[in-house]
Image (cartoon, rainbow, N blue to C red):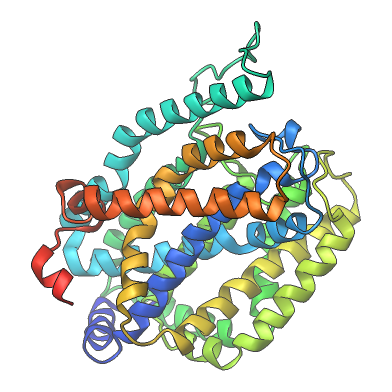
Length: 413
């Protein structure tokens, strides 16, 4: 971490001579969000889905288990790392008050106003699934619902917005404190130490070093179901230790990367190595955990610690490798990618009820699982893209989510 003057200088360089980096990182962020649609669409075809998902299709797939597992390893760490990068950039650009207003509009407001509507749609999809499963009749007894208390609150897939708000608070507070102490000798020493630490992230062993805190947090998570990786706070307002460490570290690393973008150069050179290690470590974790979901908690022994370490190292290797890959090959402005990047936020917010409803509609058919998955993905993306273009992109809702947009200029481009 450098002084505020150095940080502003780097930001100026980014916006004047290296704007291609933003295209690559924007595309990666959209990639992470859209993978979530595939992740949820695949869940009804996983063996044992009746124990952890709303819809359990009678067509099961041995292929989708490893696909789900691999996506789940890196998707959210990658997203939170990019979120930290863009949050720091926004804070430098807008200042504290402007940043708070911006994140209140783009993150807090969608969470507070969108959650009741989306959760209601999810309930409707659950009722539809139960109606289809029982042959056109609703079951006489419904399963117990959430208590809507802090430790039993169904945030569903919007938990990532809640987690972002929790991470913004200490980040902004520390940034203000840091800026106020720039003349302190201790702060200057920490700046130099931070530069050395960030430079070490270009080394071969960096993902393994970063994996240690995450592995310990997972190891000490009681009743950890290791097949599903880091437990997410989707059913509680209290994120667990593993979520704080894993997603908090990713967010913090992204925050620091904005001031030390030279780290990206090392990732761009070694992206093939990082992805090779990521796939290798993930494959070994699959061998240890099994090719299909296991709902049994991992025994609290050395094997649990080893698995947690390899799992966390795979996630970091994916973050480094995919970022390097994106910065190498997604450097130019492409209208289609830009459009998808803009739409990805809306798509992810709205996709889950549509995915569940479509899964329920095709669940009793005799179609092949691949055709069903194509129908689920295609219909969900089509409806969300159409609604984004006609109801969101050039409206006040689009201004809330992505900022104001000039319709005529954008269409011409």
